[in-house]
Image 1: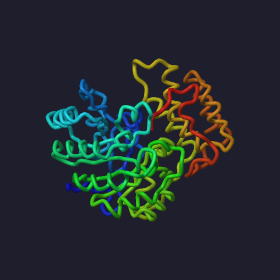
Image 2: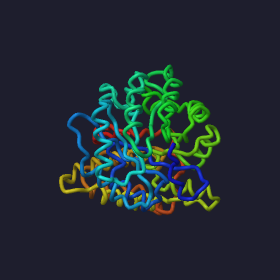
Image 3: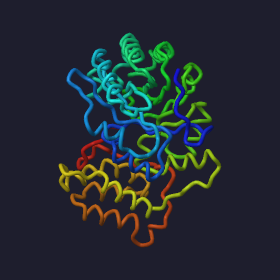
Image 4: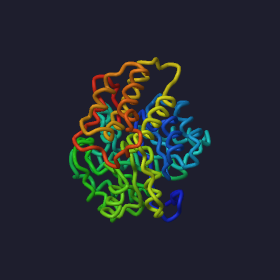
Length: 354
């Protein structure tokens, strides 16, 4: 078993960026470098199939993120020859990856219906083949991200046995089933069971919304660290805050003014030549659906933001809710406001596979 890279401050629990499709790309990784990068980065998944070849955006996210932190490339697929071929391509290109991660948790129906991602969890025999193939092909670290099962937990223990059998170096466990997606409570007792069973470090994933919640999860599960996804879209300072908490330093508390600056950074970093203004604004809504969970209790920011169609309109809404009338000095809450829903597939957004 290959040891993981040390946390930024040795002896602390690891923090990790969860792989999120259409989110954890180069611009977002670079932003986290500005706001406080985690110990470990994971790319969005790369779909492996008969005609796949590593594309430039994926290579750029590995080579140009500039955070100084190790990055793992995540693969999703089930074809053994194509997985082997992709591993060879990564190694022949000498890409500076800390390891290769297998996605066994994506809950998007268009993904699991193809028997990849979370769909693999229905067939332990297939999981055995895929893990064996990748362990034999990968010379360095081999990691896995998974859920507790597809629509139940009947294969959970068997798959933990396979994680041990194939010498996986790190297991990231999102403690929901695939069919539960993000709707249910997180079943943290399964992470605790994995920690007790698996010989490798286990990262706890699922609703790590704040420093306080993260510490509770660590205490409850005894995991080796925390993997954070949607909450770092809402609060990009969360990895910095966790590191400050673990080392006993004062914890940075962002204001609504800081959030306004973050939104502008997001807008500037997510633009490109092929994206017109309306498309760019709609793309931003994928992020703002999560940021808005901490702005106001009545959800008016979310309501107004979702109806904008230009940068000027979006700026007006953000200024009104975040900095006008002295609001810039108000603290951004640690936790999402109860009762608000991100609605990433709202009628004016393109949706977000997280």
